[in-house]
Image (cartoon, rainbow over all chains, first blue to last red; front, side, top):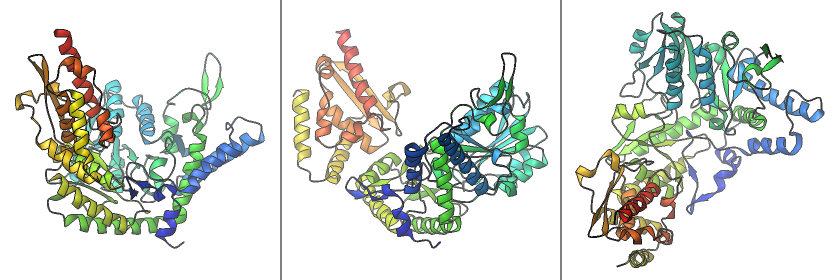
Length: 405
Length: 139
């Protein structure tokens, strides 16, 4: 399929609206992506035509819902190249997925064991491990970041030892967009027998991840970052680890037999999908994956890279504008400040011009502390953004700077 | 002047502007003329919670009237704070308690006083009223 930006934009109903009298320019894609009509339609279709609970009905409509739900799992398995479809566990999103693993490893780690976390982590990736360590006495070590926003790999190598049981890194930093060298990190960690969890929330909309090739032990993502609905995501885990981990929540679906003496847990993936899942969300998630694959990740990458280059070049002409994480090895995210102007002020004025950006700490206070700043303005592009929108950003930003100086 | 009179005056000033850009520029100007909180009162206990930029508020009573001082790292937040304090500072606790902020809607800056906006101004307004309430009990 050819990449026709005008045609693609027609797929997204929200891109037609106006905000504060201007055409809506959505540059907050790292927070959440917009939804194409086909995903929205899949939700409406499910609720209009085959809404039923799954896996336990003898009736036709329940079977249709179950088929659609499991077919989404297969689409996602194929997309990420997982070995088995039961290695894909549906969760409410990345945060839930990480908590599921942290909870599972609580009983698998002992006092004195160590886990390594990257210094680029989102809050949600730090807190569950701190909670886990409080319970089992394991210790957290942090891979420091460098001025470029990249992780210091040589320090990571020194942190590794036979005490290291777990390593957690994000595939792509949400605040800066830096792509971490996860293949190198996974291989090195495996030399010490450590398990690796990669948070792919920021990566999945930009690149196609091959889980078997990466040989990663756990990988997570959220559907809403990749054109899917909110409130649904996945945890991929290698079968052997998912079998070792105890279930996270008790409830329906996750059991195979219950007596008052003993409950036998269901097979994967149901062991980790207690209760009625987000059926519509999962179906929408599958539809989003299919949609992105139809567009093609090569096209997505090419277009986003050209947007990033175009915007970076333009923004760098603005006096006193400083870009954080100015590495070439990143996705279409630009995090910046202009002189002493507060990010909140810039974001507020851009909003008046119909431009949606993110301001603040981006849930990554350690990164902000590193640069000794209270926050940044973050613009993040998606494949449906255009250079024309970047021109509007540039002009509006100049106006904002004049007003705020 | 009463709170209502000052509010009406502010509404009149803003009615001269034709678009949001002029209103914002004026609001930013007002922020620059504000009586700033003294550095010794820029304490953590005077920080307003819930904002992306730091926002401080201090209050004291002089001859039965409440005087507020403020400062913020963000100048838009400071501008709105200035518009609030112009109406509420140098007034009696009872008048402050019994007043409203409809004038903020009328001057087209309503979005800044939305409870979901992370600028702390709603918390600041609440704090302005709390101080007034506390001072009214002391009298």
